[in-house]
Amino acid sequence: HRIPIFIRAYYESESLHSEMFLRDASEGGAFLISYWGDTPQTRAKITFVDDLERPLQVDVEVVRRTDWGIIRGGEQPGRLPGIGVRFLQSSATEALLQWLAHQEDELRDKPLILIVDDDQAHLEILSMTLKHYGFAVITLRSPFGVTNAIALAEPALVLLDFMMPALDGSSLCKLLKAADRTRD
Picture (tube, helix red, strand yellow):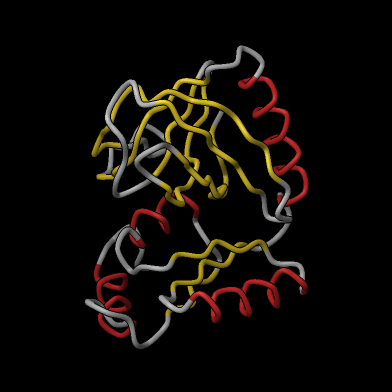
């Protein structure tokens, strides 16, 4: 099951509390986008949260840590760090796929906007305002990974904060304009 938008996944284990994004769900497990993760056999809880802040919680076990994710349509895999997890409840796959189908139905006709800003308050204000006006929204708090996010989610518009640590909005815009996958 391919995810047309990024679904927030709040990952909690004994050693790590992290916000990740669900990219792929398959029978018995899922792939989560993250720049960090636990080692295989770590048990954790993941709470998936949709665009309307409705949660779905599942128990998981990490099965792999990888630097390679999946990009659609037979293209070469792009560098996409993350972790693969196995659901511990047999009913979790069916529950997640039903939950995702509902998200797809609700968001299918909404234009998607990606917001990149290191300021959480700005993200929340922009996100709430755009959702109020009928847009689907993805938010990222770091400029790193934006190229992959754009290639995977195909947003109609990208809003960049100008002042961010390490890579400012102007530099990030130049990188996006220089890359074939994100030029348009």
